[in-house]
Length: 99
Image (cartoon, rainbow, N blue to C red; front, side, top):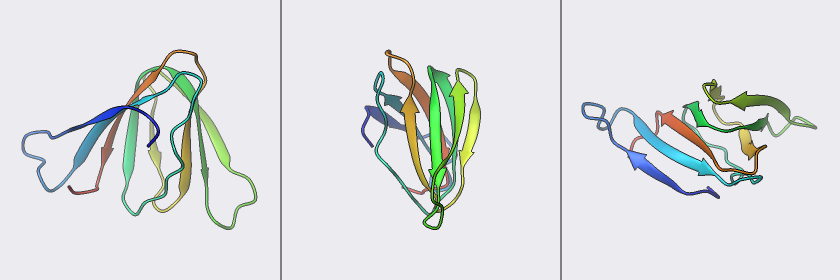
């Protein structure tokens, strides 16, 4: 994904829900992604922007986030997480992807 991270398995969620924490490098971005599962993100530390788009859009929609922000990535959309600060950002991600 372009940043350090770790998977988290919460007791009782096995086979139903996945979780991970990802570190977005300072003044960097994560790799472009698109997937067929839902993701909900909670910003633990940092600030930045997220770009989201579909194949038929000419330019991405973007929004800003900061510590405490919560947002969802729409199903089957391209997206990129961009860190606006020089220090790393930490994001907790919950997804319907089953491992």
